[in-house]
Structures are given as C-alpha cells and as structure tokens.
Image 1 (cartoon, rainbow, N blue to C red):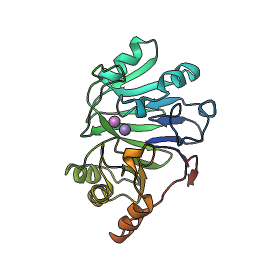
Image 2 (image 1 turned 180 degrees about the horizontal axis):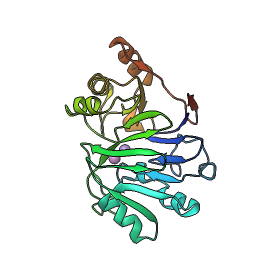
Image 3 (image 1 turned 135 degrees about the vertical axis):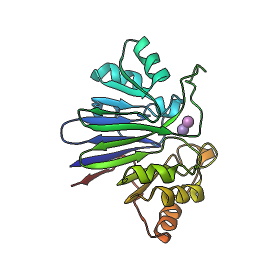
Image 4 (image 1 turned 45 degrees about the horizontal axis):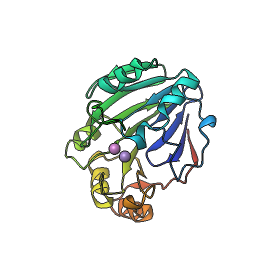
Length: 226
Ligand code: NI
Ligand code: MN
C-alpha cells in the first residue's frame, strides 16, 4: 500500500506503512502549504535540487527526525558537512533502500543553494515504494529522453511541473506525460507564486484528451493506493 500526500508546490510525502519519505519538503515560507512541518516525520528526505523552494525545510526536518537525505553527490556532501545523515547518489544510478529502489534521472534546470553555492546537477527521481513506481521529474524543461525513462520503468504515478517560467508549462507537461506514459499524472509546481500561475484543470483535461488519467491534488490531500 502507498499513502501519497501532496503538501503543495513540488512537495510530496510517501508512506508505505513502514517508512515515510518526503520529497522536496518546502513548508516554511510556502504560501500554499497547509500541512504543519511537525506533522511530517520523515525517515528519508529526497531532494531533486538545492533551490529554496525544493530544499525547503530539509535541514530542520532531517535534524528533528534523524532522517537520511538522499540527493546527488554535491548536495548530499553539503548536507553531510552540516552534520546530517546523507546518502550520496548521482544521475543514472539506483540504490535499494529499505522502502525500495530509488534512481536519479536527468532534469534540465539549475541547482545552486540559496547562498549561491553550486550543488551539483538538478535531478528527477524514480522511486519504487509501496508497490508503485513514482516518477517525480523535479524542476525541468521538456526532454525527449523522457521516452526512455518511460520505457525503462513502467511508471504508475508521474508528477510533472506545469507552472511555466522556471519549468515546463502545461502543453510541454502534457507532451512529457505522452513520452513517459504513466498510469496517472499529477500536476505540480504551479500557483505557489505569481509568476507560475497555471490552471491544473486545463492540464488534467489535456492529459485526458491524449487518453491518460490525471488527478489534481488539493493542498494537504492524501490518496491511498492499494
Ligand atoms: Ni528549481
Ligand atoms: Mn522550483
């Protein structure tokens, strides 16, 4: 089983009944987050890149919960240098964690932390957990290799940014869904800030028009998968 909670922006929490995994936990300073930081007790924190709206509360959440940060080498090393537990990986590599296998993919974006320090390459992530295979693209533009990603792993749930400006907008994100061919597509990275306004219902409709399924998750909503 898998419990999938949407915090808002690109922030999700996964729970398989035993382990809690937070992806890009951005709560403090996130105008659309309704979940309290104290209510998330992650065992693992997956970071796609070091931008403030993804790195978010990783530091204090890891500290408070003795959680392990999973990130690409440069970002993981930085977290380890601050005294946190970190598992270093890199793009194209996978590793079997207690909850399941996790693999980093490419993402076309940047990754400096809020202080401007280079934190390695940005990434997307494929997570096998609770009987599902999840592809969280991270922040990225559209790229043709998404076809390969969908070919190598049968993706059950894909999270795709639709807010434009920094990432794919709706039409590119729909194309991304076509490339990856997931069972279910969930929009993310929209309406958090004025510059990334987008209508998730438009995305959902356009995904349905190519014969795929989409769910627009509410802030703080949890979906249970068998
Ligand atoms: Ni970013
Ligand atoms: Mn972002």
